[in-house]
Structures are given as structure tokens and as C-alpha cells.
Image (cartoon, rainbow, N blue to C red; front, side, top):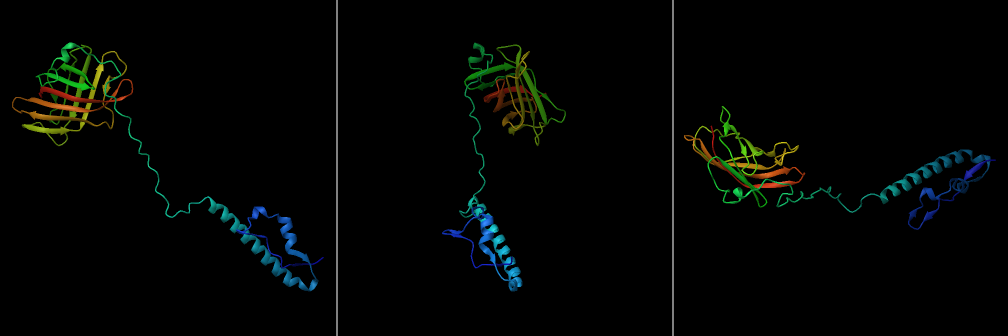
Length: 242
């Protein structure tokens, strides 16, 4: 039996071309092919090629329509959403146990020679120290000393001066490379300590190169032993830079 293409066309929906997945391929083929005479062989092949092209075109259009339904069509692509969640708030008072005593609660947040003090929330810590040890190039120093409320608890501060050198009188030097540690002997974790990336500042308010006496302040963010972040503030010290 010979065949030729009929003039029938693929079904069209009111909204445009009907999706290919809704077309039943056997019926579609039967709809466009029917018996014809032998004399139409050349025309038959031409129409078959045309029909195949139309079928492939319908397939592409239908698939592109499906993709388009899930694409953004509202103008320029919106910018990526950036997570701007704020950092957890700093707790005003420590949840950890810090050594306290009456001695540190009586005007001990003043500048006193060979003494240090600081606050965490409303809790005042204070202690003593002998001297501060300065590097041979006088571009870094460390001072430390025990708490007045606990002989096994102490503070250590190390500061790197960068572009400053303690070879002459200095005033109001703000130092940002500071390591702060407050610890109790025998405990597995520091009570308070700076971390990589912590913002912690030490200011040398006055350095007398002749006497080596130095007064200064410090404050910044520290990690507590319980994993919370706290603020050390109102820190003060007065010591000789030997």
C-alpha cells in the first residue's frame, strides 16, 4: 500500500501549540498519513521530510515552553541575597565564675603603680604586677600578674607595636595587635582570652622614656570558658617598661 501526507495539521490549543507530551504519537502519525497512488512517490518523500521537520519543531517549542515556565521573566535578575545576620549580642555580665573580693571593689579601677584592673559587665577584676618585659628592639612588650582575689588566677597581655618604638617619650599610642589571657591554674580552659580576629585594643596614654613608667588602657572582645563572647572594658595599667 502506498501513502501520501494529508492536509491535516497537529491539534492547536487556544493558548498556542499543544505540548508534545499531550500528543499521542501513533494517532498523530495516522492523522498525517493516508493511502495514495504510486505516482506520488516523489511528493510522498518530500512531504514526509516536511512532516518530520514540523514534528521536531513542535517538540523543541514544547520543551522550550516548559523551561520558560520555570524561568525568571520579571526583568533584570535580582541580586544575590547576602546573609546579614548580626553577630550574637555580647552578654553584659559573665556567666562564668570570676574571682571577686572586697579588695577589688573599693576604688581599684584607678591608675596605681604596678597594678592592673578591668571589668567584664559590672564585675571588677584587679591584680598586681612587677614590671613589663620589653623586646630588645623595644617594639613589643608583655606584662602579667596575679589577681588580688585569687593567687592562682592571673592576667597576661602581650602587645606588638608595629610602627612604634619605645625609645623616646610617647603619648596616645593605639595598639591593635594584642593578646589577652586571663586564666586560673589547673583549669582546662582560659577564663577569658582573645581569639584570632578579635578586636582588642591597648592604648599607651603616656610613656616616660627616662623613668620607663607607662600608663595605659585596654578593652575588647574575648572568648569566655563557657564559649560565649564577652567584652573586657575599663582596663587600666601602670607599670615600668624595662
